[in-house]
Length: 401
Image 1: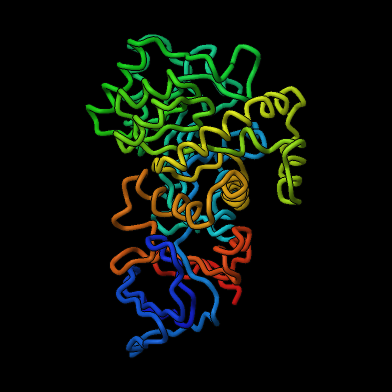
Image 2: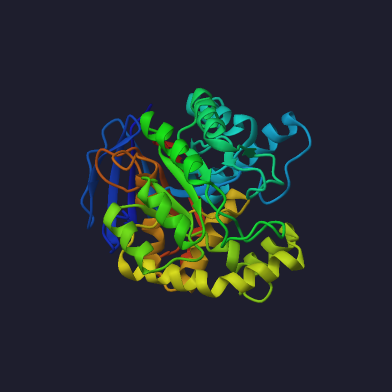
């Protein structure tokens, strides 16, 4: 692999909160070997030099709550699903700058298969941190989707977790409570697992060093997940002050997925959001449930943000190329600054996947997963859509310069 020097750009490293002007960096064997700023030069001998023309360079984006089937329903056959899910992931990195994703439920371990294919270089796609199936109960959440496994009793949860491990997942997705989108008996203020079921699932995960991704949507579920040692809390539509404090005390990462409650005809504000809604074709009943939940969801998102809870960006939307941008726009609308949203979509997302020593920021020694955008996203987060270049492992994936 030839060394690459990228020069003449504004750097948003997602460690600092300020941009660095007139920067350059060198990539050697897929990693960042040197970074300079304020017009200083890097020895270019033997390297390909690319002038970024004063544009903006930052880490590749992450989405840590992804269902590869979204925004459409899963195709009827496994081959069709494999193709569709892989295309969604490939478009995500090439057209959206999403270089890494964490899946939250994928049937038949298709996410594991694509992870291996992308890692081997057989196809172009993001890094995948795979969950395999979403483990729920009979009458659990998301039961209408093929990515769920319905388990009942501690023995079934023990076997279900072990089966996931055997198929090579990176983390376990557990369904502790209901949701906004679902039938009448699936409500986000209801909890689903009995104490012996949830404790059995967590016991196996801890025994095998498996991170847990907890779908937890009300205070009791959030606190139980944190008490049992979850890596992240997904959604948190309803919380209380004790939830916030427990997340801070335990360094539990919060993934708020604002798009689930905020993308309705009564709340959208731009063409991208309108186009998303048209494609999803969500029923009026589900839209009404989202509207009813949005105010409290907004309140606890903002309280977590203001309290300094570690938060990562996961969309629970689709397609991947648009989802992270939609979710970041909602973060800004609900009180986050652009740099807070960017750090959530980069360094903290890498942390929740356990790989922040290698990814998630632009620092010497880290893997060169990078994007270049035309305009400054610190002024307007939608400028992330002005994508010019994507690099993964120091290789150029997209180049529109």
